Image 1 (cartoon, rainbow, N blue to C red):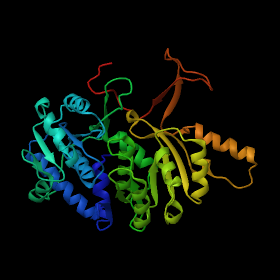
Image 2 (image 1 turned 180 degrees about the vertical axis):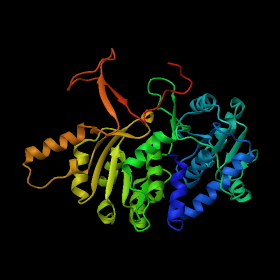
Image 3 (image 1 turned 180 degrees about the horizontal axis):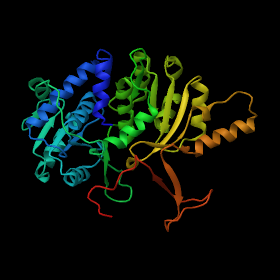
Image 4 (image 1 turned 120 degrees about the horizontal axis):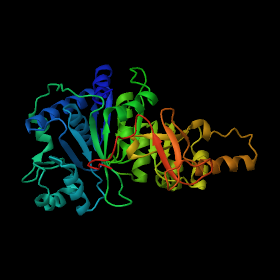
Length: 386
């Protein structure tokens, strides 16, 4: 399935439902679809063609979601950039991807201007937040472009996004991901939009990260409202959950620890939360122990994935986090230790093995490298014949 269909279907079924809450503004699914149509036409008017790369350097915002779907609708490839990266690294990413457009937030404009002489492929620079000399302005592109829906020949196996790894062993590597890479997970694991069921996700994980993209696409497909935060800040997170009555959240362990340790935690009404997904790092024993205690009734999910797999590949589900109260202290400690030291069981569509340094599978208990195979795994790295 094409990921652009997620928005098309949801905006047809629940056009008036709030799709995004950000910076004090609310956008319905009809609003979001209209803005995506306008931006799609703006990109076409700038000469963007199928498989051209469209990059963005910005914290979470509604324009991030709009830019992805606008690029996807015309068959262009979306390139989300790590806003924490150094200037030299960003220059490499833009040149490696051969991006033709760069959308940038206000806090990055000075750096982008200093990079311009070193970005030969970037023909258009778009300022997302404010007018800037020598750049196009996002709001004007939206206002002046046609709202007509764009129809393009896009295959489910066409690349829709080029994400970059963290570069822990060298320069970041480009990971081309197709519509199907994302859609397979969403269709198998997310309940489709229902006009009678409304939920709200609070999104704090950055959208340059595969976990953020997974959460965003799941919300659009499921007809959930996205309450977006630019970046995680513990007091703002609690205020947003309370104000928007958020039902679902995704947090890395350090974020979860900051929430439950905050002096104002007990003063906040976070009772709307029903699901907390955590991952991206190991979970300390004391953190998951306390979190289960202070969030009674919340379903916890431990999810593990990689950029190369487009989404979650192993999981410990809510049932793994349930304590009946009948366990002995030793049994409780054993279960909590398992939660703190496991990344879960493989998802149904993924095969997992642990390999040694010679590329041979190890027996249970062996220590080595995680290898994954399945329909959501990338076909290879960008511009890497090996």
